[in-house]
Each structure stands twice: as structure tokens, then as C-alpha cells.
Amino acid sequence: MSDGTLRFDTKLDNGGVQTGMSQLKSIFKVGMAAIVAKQAIDVAKMGVAYNAQMEQYQTSFETMLGSADKASKHVADLKKMAAKTPFEMEDLAQASQTLMSFGDDVNDIQPHLKMLGDISLGNKEKFSSLSLVFGQVKSQGKLMGQDLLQMINAGFNPLKVISEQTGESMASLKDKMAKGQISFEDVAGAMEYATSKGGMFYNGMEKQSKTFSGMMSTLKDNVKSFVGELTAPIFEHIKDDVMPKLMNGIEWMSHHLPLVKAILAGLATAISIGFAIHKFTAIKNAIMGVGKAIQLFMISNPILLVAAAIACLLYTSDAADDSLR
Image 1 (cartoon, rainbow, N blue to C red):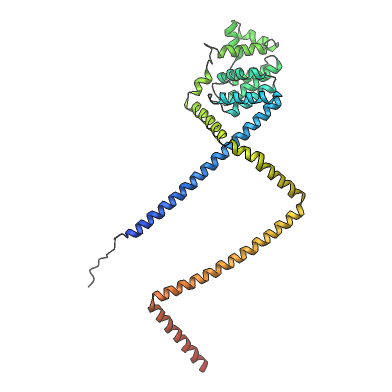
Image 2: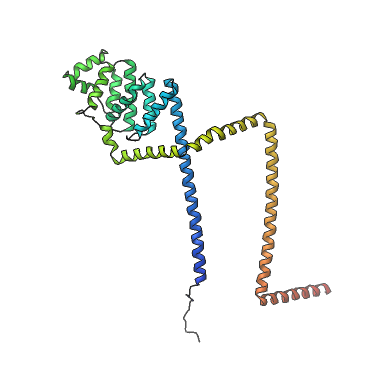
């Protein structure tokens, strides 16, 4: 008589647990290997991109300066500056190109970049804006109303600093500016004064470099530079060996387009046939697999085998009776 209770077997199979743990370890190892491989690829890509960018800067400055040696020295100086300021190499290189395009001498670039970096207080947007307007004023030789507005928007008013230096009123200085009497030298002097010891922006860039954001920017530059050095051989191999071969291959194919089309058409046909054969083979193997499974299942269950035999006999008997009627 049933007592209405259910019993469950809660005994663990040690062999199954060990097998499961072994499989889990294997999956973990494969996963970790995939993660490491992806990270290695990402690092290599970062290094190649960094070296490609440095090559572009080298070429650009070589064109602007007319000397490979001067360009190499300038790029090296910018790297050092990027490694200890809130600005990245890209920010400094672009500002350098802006200043040079307005006629700034390469020997003045470094002190001017430091001065502009201090006034911008490490802000990239302000730094870029100040570099542009500084170049404009240098090119014009004087300060104009629009230039003043751009500087004020970036956080610096040269007339205010000049007023502090000379004691001259703002109204008088604005009148002089309208007459074109505030020279580039006046503006540069005001910037030097504001970034010198005791000035409003003294060591502004250095102080910002010690903030968390500044340190992160510096770390990013240092990592990029390190990875660039690490992957330099890979970059040189791709640039000197791989890329020329790829370009030659593309050029050859462009000159033999009909032949390439014919080869591709034949390859497509071969792939289609191969896929069809593979699909047929897969179906055949699946059918054979099902048959074997049924066979094994029947052998391992003799009762089902006997039942199947009886069903076959009944079917054969019914078919024979139908034929006699």
C-alpha cells in the first residue's frame, strides 16, 4: 500500500563531478587563451597605429621645415612634452603645425606651446583655440577685435594683462587696438608676463598634469609610446614588405581583370559544388547515424526488438490476407 511519499536519489556521482570540473577547466583555459590573444592583437594594432601616426608627423614636419633632422628633433621634443603634460602627442603636433603655418619659427615652438598650455590650464579645446588665434595675431602683426574675442572665449584677455603691466586704462587700450596699435609683440609679452612667476597662469599646465585626469593623459601617452617602440619591427615589416606586395598584387589584378573574373567565377562554382557535396555527405552521415542509434537502442532493449518483430509479422500477415480477398 502506497503511503503517498516520494523518494529522490540525491547521491552524487563522483566520476561525473570530476568530468564536469575537467570540462569546466578546459573551457576556462580556452576562454582565457582567447582573451589573451585578443588583447595581444589589440596591443599590436595600437602600436602599429601609433607608429603610423608618428611617421605622418615626421613627414609633415619634414615638409614644413625642409629637413628630416629638424623634423626628427621636433617630433622627439613633442614626445617628451606629451609624456609630462596633460596634452597628448596629437594635441601638441596639431598646435605645432598651426603655429608653423602662421610663420612661427621652430625654435620658438616649444616655449610658445608651454606658454599657451599654461594659459589654457591644460584644457585641450582652449589650447587649440589659443594656438590658432596666437598664430593669427603673429601673421597679422597686430591684435584685432575678432582675435581679442577669441582669446577672451579661451579664458585670456591680453588687454587686461597689458593694463596691469602699464597702468593704462582698458578704454585707452581698446582705442589703440581699433587703430591697429596693439602689436603681436605686445600680446606675446602679455602672455609671457601672465605665465611667469607671480602671473595668473604660472605653471598652470604643470599643476594640471598632477590631477587625476592629467595623470591619466600622461599615462596614456607613455603607454602608447612604449607599445610603439615594442611593435616598431612589426610596423616596419608591414610597411616595407607586406604593403608593397599587396599593392603590387592589386595592381597586377587591375591589369588582368578578365582573368581575375574568370578565376573568381571558377572558384565560386567549385565552392558551390563543394558545399553541395558536403551537404549531401552530412545528410548521409546523419541518416547513417540515426540508423546506428536505432540499431544500438534496439539491441540494448531486447523487448522492443521482439515487439518490432511481432509488428512486422502482423503487418506481413495483414498484407497477405488483403491479397487473398
